[in-house]
Amino acid sequence: MATAKQIAWRKKFVKLYGGKKKKSSRKKSMRTGDLSEDRFVKRLKETLGKKSLVFRTGINASEGIPDIMAFSRGKLSFYEIKPGGRYNIYDNTDQFLRKNQEKWIQKNCFENKIKVYIVFYIQEGRKSTKFTYYQKRLTKQNLKKYSQSSPKSNRKATLDKMYDDTYSGKIRFT
Image 1: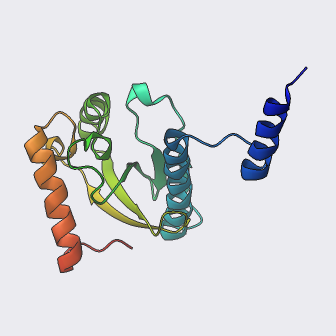
Image 2: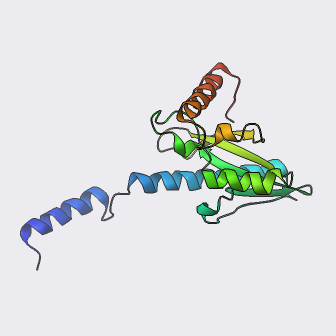
Image 3: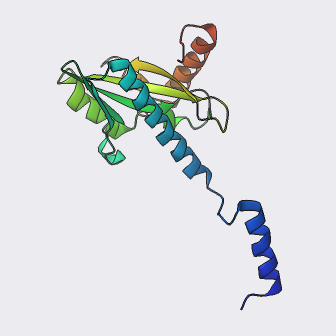
């Protein structure tokens, strides 16, 4: 049997949150990442045309396979979606490729001459579902620059340059 204090707390909880537990920030960021991927897939389908095949790979992240795969005009390409902008200058690893992604891209894409892109997104407002994107083609020369295996100072410099280029007009998020 619940006490009066427990009943009062439950009523207050239901009134504040509608009977639902508050989502953790990790789950919210995961939702944002999934939503941004879905929106980019839709946008890529419009860009590449009706005859192209575009889908989220949905494979376990530990494998290192990029988020989106596209087949258009007889060519295969991969897209890895990452958050853009300045979030936390002390811990900026989520904006870069993980080591297993870097290895997978080197082994499977560069050797087979498959195009790979890293796509940065910025969410317009905190609760908005509108995203703007900037895609950069990865090459053997710049793969290390966009990977977590690069030194922290290089990662920070990359983000600073991208941030400065965005506001100077050299890079356009569209």
